Image (cartoon, rainbow, N blue to C red):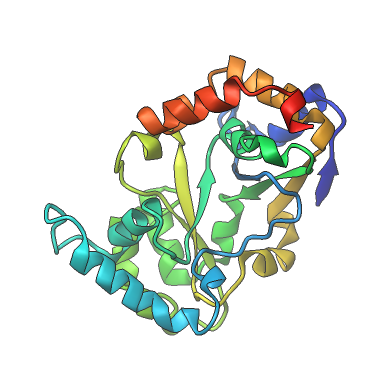
Length: 263
């Protein structure tokens, strides 16, 4: 479902829609979010954007990443922790970044001033509901742990590596992997990763067959400045989301840019 908004107030209603959980009498949203500066940007992974026989390159990329990574990264770490670490540091993988926070997703839909002439997009996915599509042996782990997402240890119980993730499973499936606290960037961005059972599968195509699980909010270009300024006032900035001097510089550059220079 695609949603068109016309105001900041309208946006708040849709970002937090369906968050009331009557079973616990609390506002606990079943949705996670992903923001893009451009409305038509799809859910293609960085691995897929390599082109060519990218699905055959995946294991080579990860193997060499492990081989040349820092010496303090122990060899007994699971594939899933290595994959999260690789994604975090820019290696092309089949993972996509998501966040539990609608405002952090909104940041990534409004953080590039040169894109303020373009409409943005927020993807929202019901990560609780999608677990009903998991294969039985994956679902059993989720139910046993009373969790809605996988950790590396949980996933390692049913699959030791990428090659065997979909072994014996007929239908493609999607799961979410919560990374370890690698650094404050992961923590502050309230991050998790989507993981498709096959590297060749496009998440957008999979969701087109499971439209009950997601909705999209179009962010009109004319609202981006208001949204951006209000996020800054709420301290949703690069300084917080990318701790360190680089994030500080990114925030200051954008914060002091003239609106007229972008028009």
